[in-house]
Length: 279
Image (cartoon, rainbow, N blue to C red; front, side, top):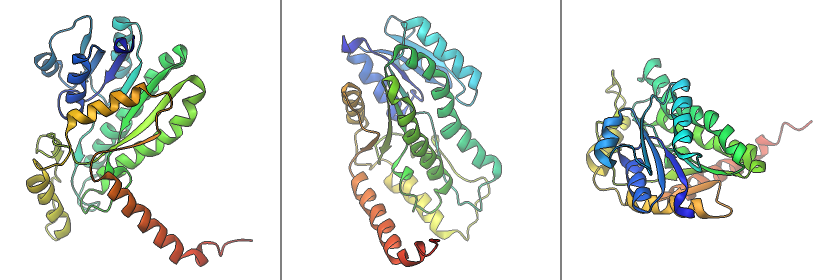
């Protein structure tokens, strides 16, 4: 039965991951949910049961990821759908963010996702089926937000390796989809979910304006419902040929069209120089 599929969801204690797990359990799916602390998951969804397995994990630790995936298979017998949702926002210009701040954002958003993929694929290949949803962002195809360069670059990375992953796994009956959420009314833009630079440079006025706009104006006024996003992911998981790219939310298509327009104009304007390298 469709409702007996096993979902493995990272970053499940809040935001889109939280809403997805809540929806999945209400519809009878079996769910392994991860967070940095298992207590938050137990409080939200209950203790381990036939349909639910709460797991604490350090997404940056490959051996830790390997262990929780193994526990999931031991508990449910298989994994059918993987949602790589763990991540956080990092505000700060390229100049003001330290090497440590930058690497930490990559450790979670990029290498954490790769840890999950690396360790879950042997199980999916063996059963010759599975869906992998890698959660990127509109910032994964449009980075013209001052002060969001590092965060956007992590989401560009997720989009890039998901494209490659889709080609690498298709012969095994596995589908990979990169999801580009727009602005959803979650706690993503709260101070608990977004990190700001330890040493901000006040001269970076555009970045400070963008920072305040996101934290004080956009936050709480996002136009999209995370519960409806969960519905979309569940529906896509049932499709015979799911997309490699999935825009999610009001406003995402407009941003994509803007990006296409910018690329097209630059390409056309400089086409003569671009092709002047021919032998």
